[in-house]
Length: 285
Image: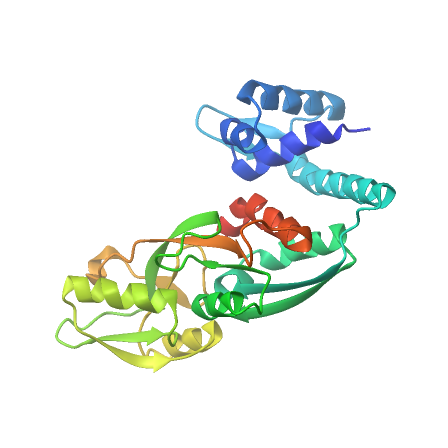
């Protein structure tokens, strides 16, 4: 049998891609995490990580162990909840921006469903600004979206640069206003784009507006203009514009989990914790 403590440390290293960061997240010394991984490698008789002075990467056997470890820990948690009579139940009204729907969110929700089969999920997908409005109106229990300017609520899941993207090849005409493809207000990305261009003194016009990312993508593929997107949220057919395009930096955005109350409880607390724990997965393309 594999000790759940060893498996938890192994998964933390796999997610953080490092022993020091894994120890910080688990509240353990780096040496303790390393010891747990060595014990697990001894038990399996296989090397689970390829290590050097600069990086930590899963081996083929380590990659296989990720799925096994998740399954074992989830089964262990379900058994504990069952016999303790603490299985989560109820309805969770959860809002997610399209940035997350296009990322690894389905995988995280699938794992959450396996762990908490008695929780009914009501999913709302929309613009970050709209989701904040629904949360403040009491229509959502939890959201994951870009941090709203001036709003300090929530816990950071990950930080990422916003970049310009367009159909390849795309070349701006410096003598004409920059053609933009944007979400309608209230859009956090829209605000960041317009403020960056205004600071740079660059003229612009809104060539197309759409309330869905698929609509923005279609307009960009048609050559109507350019969009702004999170760097790691790759979109088929669109390419990040190079510095030679002469466009201003859009800065970094924070993706956060925010609840309807300061202290999350029940299903909202469980899903919020799962989202934060999987921040490294969201960064993957």
